[in-house]
Image (cartoon, rainbow over all chains, first blue to last red):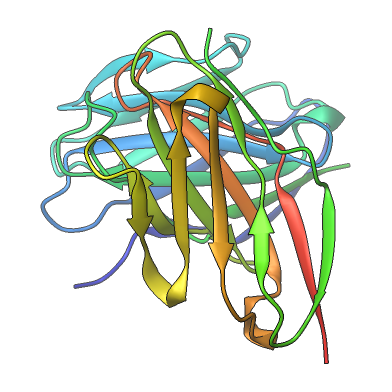
Length: 115
Length: 113
């Protein structure tokens, strides 16, 4: 069974631009979560989607948004990019989500660099 | 609020030596605890998890962890480290809001030949 895939793997943008990252979960998984990883702040939860609905949201500004499609694929969008948005963005999928006992499987991440 | 502390930022051990990585958590109820490993340029791979029951949990790659409620700890151990174990290790706690995980700062493991 294929794992979680994320595209693109690397991205370079300039301040003020916007960016869209994509995540395809493991087949059969309906929950997708997004995390930001930076050297200064570590791994931080962005949001979780289940059945095309955002179920949880972390403490990030409104510039960070996401959505989920009927096939469970998810995208996250960052508008008006800032230098501090440079990070590794990780996507994780789980069968149903909503429960801490659901194991999350992580993708390889998208490395975003903002210049 | 839930939180996780990994006191050791870097650890260096010799190949073949035993390993213990520390993790302390703060959580109001029974926590769901996880250990993940991240190799350079890679995502996170789950090593093991604890939800309830036996406090000694076995994972992949020969790792185990012990849940100690009295010490709010969930330390990761391996009896004999291999060079391929060099990576960054993250402890995480879940349970506060759906399947949101709160991660510790990570411990980078280096293995000396």
